[in-house]
Image (tube, rainbow, N blue to C red; front, side):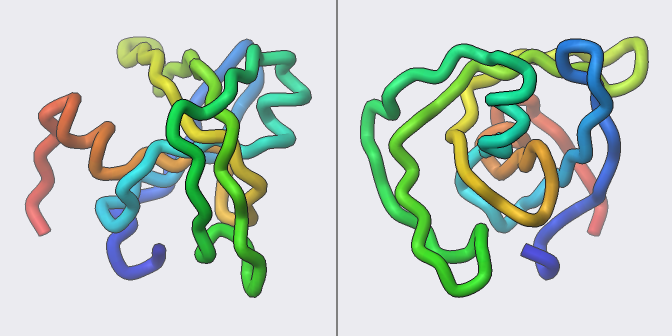
Length: 109
């Protein structure tokens, strides 16, 4: 994820500060499983479960849950999106190419 991540920032979700990575190399939007549990967010069954390898070193992770996450970056940007729920080491929320495309984000580099 280091090669394509654009930047790290902080956001607020349910009044708590969270670490965010915006990552052009990821095809999914994901949220940390423990964050979902601690904030009491509603978990749903994933409509198309799948497995990934890169979120935790050496472990295959089954992605079978998703969650609607509301967050804000600063005082002006507020968003809500459906994220896959996973255990990961990198951050609380990882926003991938889907988020960037849907929001028509642009960056030079």
